[in-house]
Image (cartoon, rainbow, N blue to C red):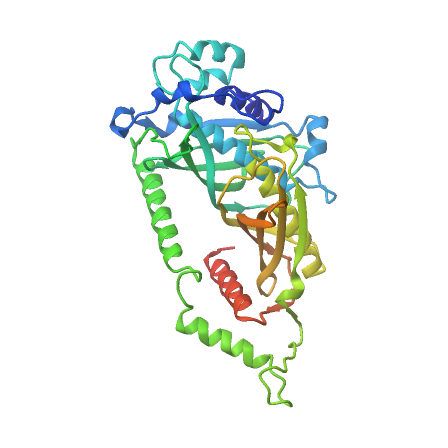
Amino acid sequence: MLTIQDVRKYLRKVVGARSSYSDDMPNRAALKPHLVDDQKKLAPRKMKDSFQTVQIPLTDKSIREKYINIHGSVRFGQLLENLDTFAVLIGYQHNSPMFGILMEDLDLLAGYISYSHCDQSVLQTGISPLSIVTAMVDEIKIHHDHIDPTVDIIMAGHVTWTGRSSLEISMWLEQNGEKVVDAEFVMVARDSESKRQSLIHPLEVTTEEESKLFELGNQHKKQRLMEAQESLFENPPTIDERQLVHQIFLKTLNPRSKSFRSRILPEGSLWMDSTRLKNAVVCFPEKRNIHNKVFGGYLMRKAFELAWANACVFSSNRPNVVAVDDIFFHCPVPIGSLLLMSSQISYSDGNRFVARVHAEVMDTLQGISTTSNVFHFTFTCGDSQVPTVVPKTYGESMLYLDGLRRLKKKTF
């Protein structure tokens, strides 16, 4: 079985990436004629065509060293990196089923695929004209607090929904035959030269189970559109939410002063602005992806590790991540960037709380920062109660409501 380490090498061949770093990408203009202007020209693909299984070989001690944490479990941040890599593999697999042969013999496949006439994206060149990248992480569910670092993990997944240029990929991780993680990623295909959206193969549904999966993908898309429309960046809070914010505000007023400016912190609470934790990351070439930008999985890992540290400080306990959702990739992060990350606890309830990480790329010459990613992680602390997060400003109140909305969607 192919390992996740093999996948990374393989993907570099798929896009024709150099094995060593260079600040310029190979000219791929010759691949543009292999793109189409009508999706009907692309043959439908079945879900089984993109199905893949990959191994994380934790029984290999040299590999295990990168995955084990101080608590004797698997580092979740490393799994985030692997999921991102795996999703890209499945995306390319959907657009070229001949890639399945390469899984058995990478060198043989590289030669064979150049003669393939089954998919124009690899016709004549052996290199895909598409750039398939992560648009967002819709949701990740973690089913076990402890994942054994001495037992191999099997990653499996396939495409479950497609649009014109986007595709939803469902993945799951198993250990000893038991599912430990579920993940839903949304990928987009772009022209490798112009970076504009490119058409992908439509998905053909052949069974009742596949119909349910495809319809679930449609529901996910509708849900994302509805949440975008109802976002607090676009619309004011609901009446109930406004009343809640006002009640919280009243609880923080000093009853002796009769002043709106005199605030007190309720017992067992923390001001939201005191729950921040920040980090700065210099993006070296070592962490580049196949498109010569910073690897999205690496960004997710760094964000999670900051959120986890933030969760430890906030809870004074050992937190367990139970869900990840709505990770948006707003823009690629260039190699050499200074990435500024800020984590903050946006909402807490009992033993559960939400950490929001905001990442921005800073242009050190012009002093301009651009948001690259926003991450949301949900943690629990067993039976221990965590402090109640209290917003002080209107902006913090919006963060509070956003965290509340996210936690309400979760089922534990």
